[in-house]
Length: 243
Image (cartoon, rainbow, N blue to C red; front, side, top):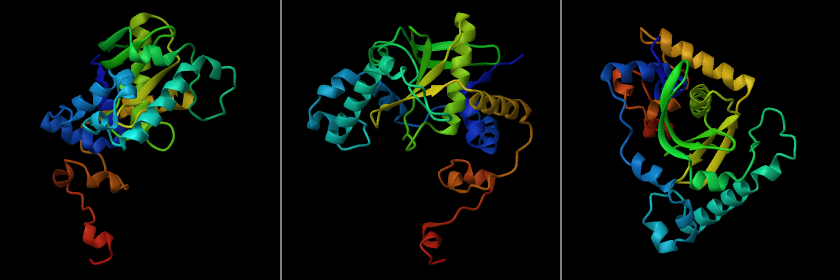
């Protein structure tokens, strides 16, 4: 059985039609600038002590002082992750329900850029954390107000399942890092999220013809396949009421 790539699961969750065109174009390379942002995730400690002038030259998306303060809060939260587990997490909400100092593990992971192969999926895990065993994925984009994006949840579940399969031990969740924003968030493995993963896996495996276009055209505006897809997006003029 052919293993499904993590990136295909993520794209299919965002838009199955986009995956169809990406496959046709054999386009799997990350956009420009991604490597520079991901590099930030290897330098959190030095970024905390960097001057505003130095931070201004980094690929961050916040004002230097705001970025430093946010990264500091993230450090404090992950350092106290073990203490947080004393509280029962609210239902259906993300919570850093893990053990130990995850900040130290994130800054000095056991393994980086590990290719992991599970029973169904395979791909790169940017960081492998231990005690407990968990994957960390680094996103070059912006986090939502709470939690992580749906496509990233599916990716996180796939990475956790593949890591568990590789190490033959359970994995309780995964971490999503947004280094350009100083945010690191936890994705616990839950039944609803596993169901999202199963749906995405089925979509990827059954994708032979172009699926229906999405009703959410906001996703189409920034899509590199919008012209090929034939979707009509609203221009800035029409959005402002002039057309």
